[in-house]
Length: 155
Image (tube, rainbow, N blue to C red; front, side):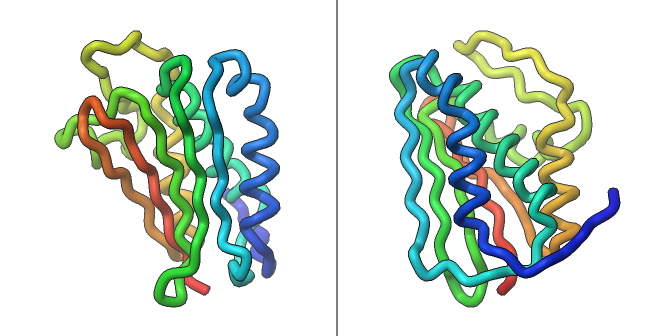
């Protein structure tokens, strides 16, 4: 992939990606909340690639959150790094799948959940883009209690 890095804020990209999901959110009667630190610093980013990351993470959260559930997108400054998290109230991910889900063509098969068809490439692309930005990405989850996908980028 080719990248065009520019100084920019993540806040408008988060808002744009969240706004694009409104039809899906409304269809599933999901609540989406954003909590973006007002003093979020600018970072060197490829806006389109980071927007793709946000669309993927928020889209997955909406996809796996049952009707009436909640999705939260937060961004804050921690130790000279911008941390963005997307959390949901979906079925959660087993410990053995937490790292594997970032590999190409891997999809977690969730117990007690309708299987969601996909290519298994979305999170691999997320990982690739975030690493290309000098950051890191990971997931935290407990089966039955939702998931959080977090990435950090240096300021």
